[in-house]
Image 1 (cartoon, rainbow, N blue to C red):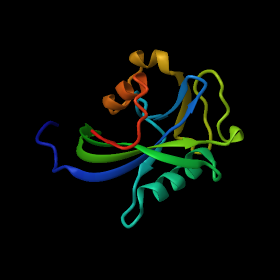
Image 2 (cartoon, rainbow, N blue to C red; image 1 turned 45 degrees about the vertical axis):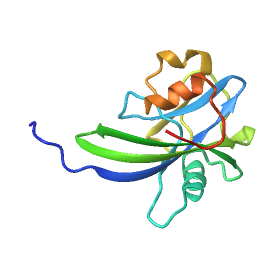
Image 3 (cartoon, helix red, strand yellow; image 1 turned 60 degrees about the vertical axis):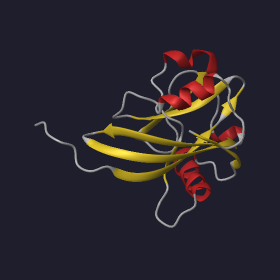
Length: 150
């Protein structure tokens, strides 16, 4: 059935930029073919940093992750599963304890069974379906200067 999409849902998302030895940690839902940075929705009344800490615990089991600088605030519009979204994403640089997310080859599961994680070399991101696309471009350029509005 086709027809107009319902009105846009307005959401906020907090995400982690986790780098290690020229690689970035990406996440994907088993139902999706694309990758994104680990993180999730900011709940009503929650600060973005608090949401990211909660999501990192839920997805990676990393309660001692160090949340660093807000790198980017990205406004994004997209459609997913028949619904339109207007998203404001808050992207923070974080440091994970080594035991929270080992650097291994290929996809791996961690805490949440519906997610897969993978370390991707920054030099190979051009071939990765990473959303939103602006994140891929910024990571490839290593544009990790503090707080940019995109």
